[in-house]
Length: 310
Image (tube, rainbow, N blue to C red; front, side):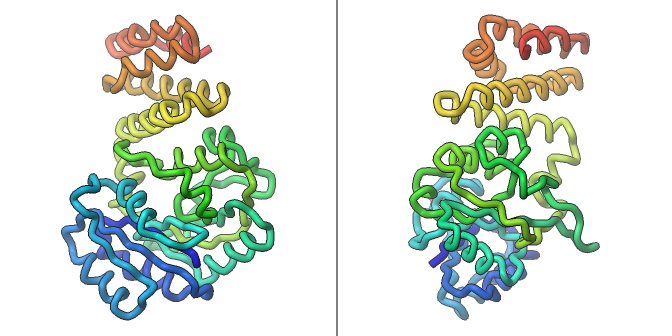
């Protein structure tokens, strides 16, 4: 049985289409656990209609003992699940009818630890581009290649053995733009026995309330959120990931913060960044606060930042 875990918050406009697409899967052996992160719309009413008509659907209100946040809800939903393999899915996206069957066919026949479908964005006008336009026939399944987006997928795409899902969790308390980033890097550090299915299995909805779309409306917010993602990831894997991966993420984080300072936005967590730069780039990392300050005041700190990141 596949366990599907969905975290939702105020998705009354979309969640019925999502759950209908799951109910209509050609592969029938699944449980779908929906964890409501405190919705204030009529999401509960809509979801309970599915629960009443199909025992494979389970609806849970996030308890007060679990902090608010999509990743907290995902992790909590996982503790309630019983199946293997495991799939996390977003409450505003759509599974194509053969999504689970195709994933399971590759998963079982190849004896993989995980398989990854492909997806395409859509909105009210129709289909758009893929989230990541990579060549799936040549992409490498390594933590480094996922970290630098040479290989990439979104939360919906992954189907993973429970023995590996037991060793991975979604990082909580971040700005929550790339919810699957640390999860999949950790997975790839544990196993590279996976397969990229070269077939569209999901339609990913693009709308104004989406986290990434909201961030992109203000590029400084988008850069700050992305910079935070890199810093959180470095903190997670500083004693586990490769030096190449850690240095790449730190360098990318510092460059984004330089761009923020140039736009008169003071970056956050300067002390932590300085400490990590000194650990992985040497004593020259101590110049980082100076570079940020110079850039913020004059817009001319790039040479110092380049030296630190060299």
